[in-house]
Length: 542
Image (cartoon, rainbow, N blue to C red):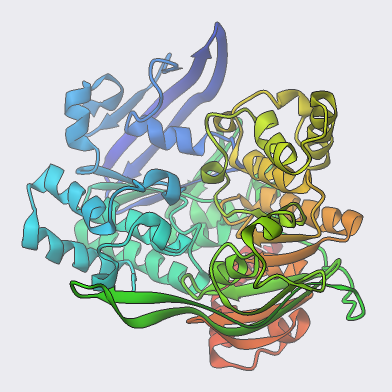
């Protein structure tokens, strides 16, 4: 191995709060060499992210405490570096791509300002010079028409586009070490491949090292030189990537390699009642220019799409980031203005007044892509899950409301005794279960699932897929399942529509779409998705 850029030895971490001490890391040791990619893999809560945050000292000190160990960056121990000096390291010599871009990006700043701020702080670059560099970075990370996105705010971007902005910010100053915490989580498979290739090229060209945190073992095998497998705050196995995949020694490593969404969707029933139906749905956003803000064109996010979702059935919506998947779902739920007929339970709701639509909200629910961003950090879990009951069933007593909350949490596999904790006290998988409980507590008929497993590791993905399937069977739920993860879609969906640039390029039964795709675009999506799946399957069979 080359000379280490970072050398971590016997690192320990514990969190202290109200007299309680919770161990988080226990004797972590590994090196990262020049031009080397080291992958940290493990389930949610295993200690991957807090290891990365320890390198940059971004933990909530003094609650976070390191009773032992060292993190050597060159000749300097970062654990004992003053905050003033750490500011010179962060974003300059060591950068980080965070897992949840919606929580990491400032909602009040434009894309240009957020990327430009990194250049200004560390390079003193501003004005036209900074704009040229910002556009260059946006092009590198695959943001289409970057000039039109400079003034956009995070909420105006898709999940994949927001993640690309985060990557551009991290790469802006060409760091020596890039910490990538689930950098491709929100990206569709084709752009995922482009980003991985981009990161690999930058690593080689700049001599950059990379610490890569991911739950996708197919990606690990493609990008990593060495792998460290973590569980319960410890590294249980580490070695060269091929060695870990072809000859895993620890039972936990074997468990990770075997984990993936399994099972089949419920039997297709074309006679089941139609819950949600849309005819010729259009969602167009005006493009305004000039002093008088005259409309000069439209962004056709959704352009004439028909959908039918039946009771106990799942319609999968797949396509690249920015193809219009989420916009379609929001349009159907009347959370965005749209054109075309929308019928819920046989009733036309397109022209319904807001007050009348609100009465149907309890029967139409959403589980969002980013559970950390969609759960209020200032509310305990009990209040988060109960909030919908307070609005839609105000006649319930506090005792009855709490009983419903306990039932919902228990149904999704969350210990009801933890309901008085805050979202940050739960792992990513647990937060997503809480988000599902918040939707299910109202006993809906239709649920829009917007990338509900994209931020989860493989074993937790499989658990959530099983949970969603069980809930659907128990309650006859109709799902609109939006995802770029085709393996998950295959495990859940009866029917699939493939979207690109606001239009449907192919639709049909899931079996037909996956086994006999007709269009070149669908074939490319399948090839990109199942290439990584084949890598994982080969690893398990070996």
